[in-house]
Length: 112
Length: 114
Image (cartoon, rainbow over all chains, first blue to last red; front, side, top):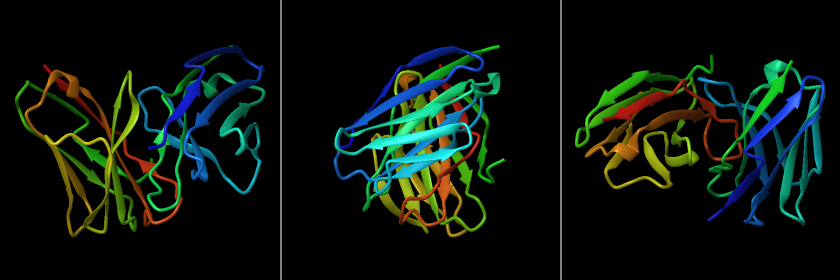
């Protein structure tokens, strides 16, 4: 089955800095890559996703890049703010099952 | 608020017991997913139901079972509980589950097995 590795497990940055979280996947058939944000004590929520037919997608301060050849994708957050502090999960899924396999999460801490 | 509800919020029970977790999906969503979240394992997919039928199975133990009722709410039954079953259990829903769709998560049920 699919295996998704996520790094780093913890990321500490100063407010205003950029943050990058990286994920790799094992199944070359995976073609959909969502990112979820989970604030402390709350539910995971989708923040951005990318499909395999594009290499990059942006939404304000958040961007995701995908390298299908290398089977890795990354989340980029620019101008970080304290409210960006949360656990971020990457995931990968493919057609047929559409069930996401999640990475283990990255705890992002933004210091004011 | 995602529109997905889960009850109870917290559950404390003893080893060997049986519990039932309940989930109501967003209005109009036909697909329900159950996940287990523990500190060292992240979000683990357990099982998916679509319109009352089991559609996909993940790493769900034989001691666990689920069902989706005609009104589309779902229940996850956990039996012969062990200490290691302590975790946060999330339910999520999506429109059909037949394509790449956003999953909307409920607030979770925190299960503590003593």
